[in-house]
Image (tube, rainbow over all chains, first blue to last red; front, side):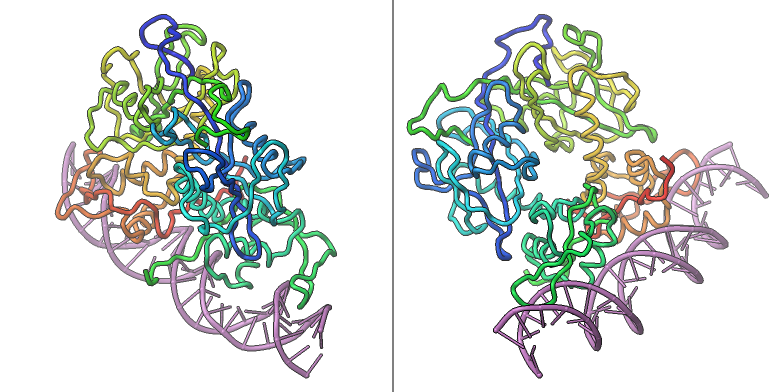
Length: 245
Length: 245
DNA sequence: CCAAAAGTGTTTTTTTTACACCCATGG
DNA sequence: CCATGGGTGTAAAAAAAACACTTTTGG
């Protein structure tokens, strides 16, 4: 809620000030492996550990604006439309930063392929690392990253976010690889194709265009992201009911 | 992210302080109508308008703790387990409060039936109002409330949140009414019943218990919320493809 | 006996799955 | 001509939808 009190007048001392930051879980799929953009910490606490990129909100920025700015600084991307960026949740446990009270708004960003980040300025150099590879991250970033992965996995079912992992023009094989990578499941190609094409507004064909993938095989038709944001019907993840633990 | 900088040392002036609050979208279903818990504002800005309940974070509180405390204060409930409470998203546009910079973490709370709120202390009296009935709310609360409604509607499909609208023991008819109210759609009773019972962990029967609903008709068997948090398979909302706008 | 609400059964339709098969390309 | 990846067809199985019908209660 905006500033408000229940005792009558407006009281400037009714609140405590907090530092507000954004954290970014930036994901991409590279050769069938999920990668995360991480920064190595240069000072205590957690010096030498990997951390999610992020930074403070400037006085007149919304969290969304700050997240997009940080993303541009960290990756060196000057994208016009910009990558897919979405709020994940806010982490506010006292003690999540030992130095001070910090409330952090976490975002998930999805990027096509993996342009190696060019340090865009004063920012510490960020690097793509395979998801799960770097040991424990700094602060509560393991938790944030796990939440981001869960959320993206769930969103693939009913939102058209998978195309955010793909370049502007992509093949259905590439789209399928996104699903298989994030879900860590193999999918039946004919059935995947049919579902995607039946889900209207998900993808639209680029007439006549085709591209060879992997150097061999029949060139694949190209598609662009459609206008839909939600998938009707959804593309449900295969159930893992009778599966070995 | 926790406090961090890119320029070397730790700089206490690298950030601006913000006021951090929580806002609550508290929902219940009463007689087949969705109701929201609202507070009438007693001072400027937006004096006399309805607003979502909420308040400031205390220095050593997480947003979740603050939300639960505010909910208890506002409703007078002293629930042990407490109602279903879940983070919605964070609203941080500069200018959302004309007086100062306020970042607000919004929550959705779901309650069974509608205990009329008893003012639990110094809090302004809160009231249940039908969803959509009160004109424009204060600040950006219309947006927050709409987001909450969207989210809950979507969650009914793949999460077991519907039981949070029901008392500890409920009939399948009551559960169905939750779906019908939030989705604003009629559902086929036999099919609904089958789906709910097939979704394992959603509900479990209370052996031998039954209750008369509406004074007439066959007494309905009672159920409790199951242990599942996600629904397998999901209970998909009927598609509105060929529907009149 | 009637109305109302719960609960069961069954047929039809649609969707999903599994898998066989054909196509186009590079080496 | 074979390996590789793209693309189509189809029959069997499963799931969803539609709707008739039975049960149990209060009046």
